Each structure stands twice: as C-alpha cells, then as structure tokens.
Length: 309
Ligand code: SF4
View (cartoon, rainbow, N blue to C red):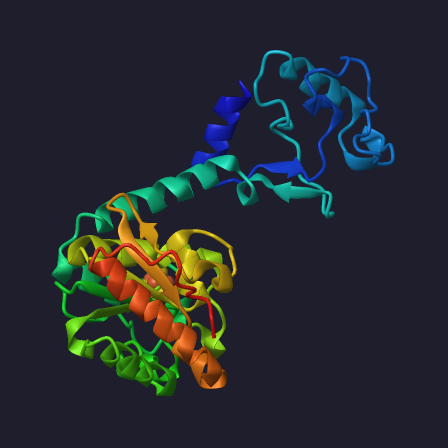
C-alpha cells in the first residue's frame, strides 16, 4: 500500500516528491483511461505528459493503485524525481506538518496557561518561539503591581525598552506617567505589558505570527493579575486584544470586554501618536475618564460624546 511506502520512506529520511500541479490521476472522478485532465477555472489544458516525466506504463500502474488507495499521487518505488521546477519534495507541504505544528503550539499554550509568575518569567526570558529572539537585546516581560486593578497593554518594546528591559520607558512611554497621574494613578500602581515581549527590528509592526506566538504570555499575565480594567494603548494593542481589524477611531469611546471573565477594556491612543498629534490628548483624557468610570461600574453617560476633540 502507498501509505506503507510513505511511512517506510519517512522512517528512512527519504523525502517523497510530488508534482506541484495536480495530475489527472489525482482526480477520483477522472475516467481511468483518460490522460488529459479537465482544466479548472479557465486554465489552459495541459497534457499529463507535459507535466509528468513518467512513462505511460508507470502512469497506468499508478492509476490502478489509485482505485483503492486513498493516497494516489505517489510514484513507484524506483522512480527518481526530475530536475525541474514542476516537482517538489512532499515534506515542504505535507498537511501532517501543519497538524503537528498546531498541536505543538496548542500544547505550548496549555503549558504556559498553567504557569506561576516565576515559571512564566523564566519561560519568556528563554523564549525562542518567533524570530524576534535573534534580534532582541532582552525580553521585556512587563512591570508593575501583579495585583493591580489596572493593566496597561501597549504594542511592543522600542529601542529604549529593549535596552532597559522595561516597557514604556522611552520618550513616548514617559508620557504614559502623566496620563495615569491625571486619573490619580502612579506608575507603580498599575501593571504594564506589551503584546510582544521582544522588540521588532526598526520598530516595525508585529506580524500576526509574532503576535500569536507571544499571546500565551500576555494571556497568562492577565489570568494571574486578574485586573479589573484593561487599557489598550494604541491600535496594535487594541486590535490584538479584541481580535479585530476595526480602526482605533471606531474602537475608542466605548467599553469592550476581554476574555471569558469579561474584563472591561477601554482603547486609547498610543503616547507616541500623542507626541506627534498633541491635539488628540483631549481624546485620550476622555478615554481615561471612561476607563475610570468603567472600573467604578458607573454606567457611561449616554449623552456624553467621548469622541469629541
Ligand atoms: S516576541 Fe514573544 S514569542 Fe517571540 S521570541 Fe519574544 S517572547 Fe518569544
């Protein structure tokens, strides 16, 4: 059986080769004797002989096996792959690899979800789950009161944070302190973390894959802190926490919730944006007041316009 061959070759470390384009024999509905596949979606017709270097006799043999074999695309044992771009090794696109990768990610996520602070910190500091581990100076895990009511979540470490190992310490980050003071909070009274624990080169945006790799750390931090309110600072933080692509202008001005615990979450602008656009500070002040009201479980005033300048 072809499945046995596949296992045998895999155990030997020998990659299987398959055509990049499907052969006619891969269609179970194709008549047994037809060599010309029906072109799909307007593609030009291509004869099997144009794509496959297999002799006709071998193709017939493969066809015969395909009648009862669920994996009909495999060539015979003595076939050698041609040296052209029409064929590729199976290991590059084997669906089993995808299943295995997602199972590994799920088990890592489950393991992190059970960690205490000490284990979590150690795991993050050693993390190599995404490519940013090769360019970081150090992991910026998070800082503040681990029993805080307020959790502030930003985007990712910048150059200063990467150097000092603490979030929101650069010029933009320092604007966060007076923002918090404006609602009666000292920096030490809140917990501050980022979507990413490692700095993206040149302060580029996190990729979705990087954010997904780092997500278990932040989610575990949230589980351990159990904040009463989350302040998502900037578009990247807001969109990742709320799992949406809605623009920040539409996410501001209302109270969202995060996770099964339905923790109130309020979105505001990133201090870096406020440095570039100081006139928007008023909106940020409105956001902070909204968050403070949400924390106090005060229902928002339906007549108040939080999006005004
Ligand atoms: S950004 Fe997060 S997932 Fe990527 S290496 Fe750093 S800690 Fe690990």
